[in-house]
Image 1 (cartoon, rainbow, N blue to C red):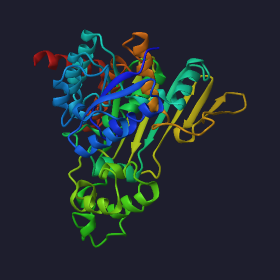
Image 2 (cartoon, rainbow, N blue to C red):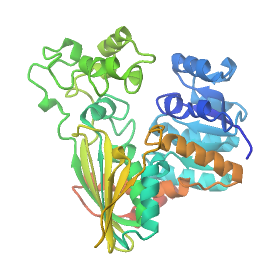
Image 3 (cartoon, one colour):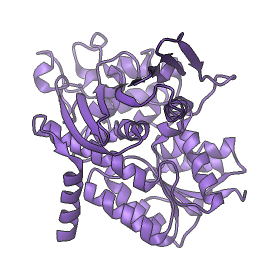
Image 4 (cartoon, rainbow, N blue to C red):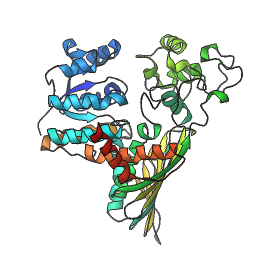
Length: 434
């Protein structure tokens, strides 16, 4: 295999710089970062220090990076959701292969246009549906294909976001509003829609969804709550007090987890003093009941697949831990698991329970249960073989986006059943009209 492949990173946030760039350190024979773009000088400085990227190849905007001649084999696009397709189209025109952070776009027409562009240019566009690359879901899918439970009949899945994670990302953070990012069911759960489609091994034909923004609303604020936690009389007592969460909470406090996610999203290279200043002035110090958020904080989706297989999915902000669970029932047995426990439990009807341990001997994974590095391995192996459609290529990924965006429409319409073929055709007609 040839290598290393050269890489340009467009967007040096928690995904571009913190999740994918470390692959170079672990596998220098596969990847070498040679260029990057980000509007925050401190993020580019950190990239240069860690990975030796030349200062003249670090740009303050995606537009400036993409105005250059092609600088690398691959571009990792990890900008904000509504910038993805614009950047991806320009990168394909320059001749880059792409690793594209999910979601592709909250606009289905843009998703379809990018799929067409990828086919026209003949370049690989791998979307970061990293869960397919985890040991947990790969083993689950393999068992189903082997017929471990016979013919699958139902799938039950859940994503437990955790109260503190939801407050960080979807109330105070970058993904709090549909008009500036994406609906929560797309941004957070297109992973899950993709996994359901993969496990079902057939197209989804109809969806129905219910959910709402129920709790993180102004009317639920205590009467004496201030706009910012640092000014609030309930400071130190409220569950969502930003000072407590980001400094000492066991889930995400700097004193406990160190200068890692999510505190390094609040401020680069966090220290207690830098964090306190950021919480006094920035978005992460706002009262969770007095933000400008509008995405749902809980949602359920019912899905019908082509053969009659049915699936249900629930996402909730109101859980203690961040973890995913799944259960598949079939004509000959059932298979279930909790991704955080890295094991599966198989019941073949009439036989003893089987426990399948998926933990690596050294207990180490990259982010998302090993999926963050797994998708990069898959991309570089694909390019080395001369292919363009990997496990999470653009064609497969668009299906998950159709499912998620149709679910959001159903939610907004009070649970109306949405036919996915008609939903996609509507987007195609709208694209043709414009």
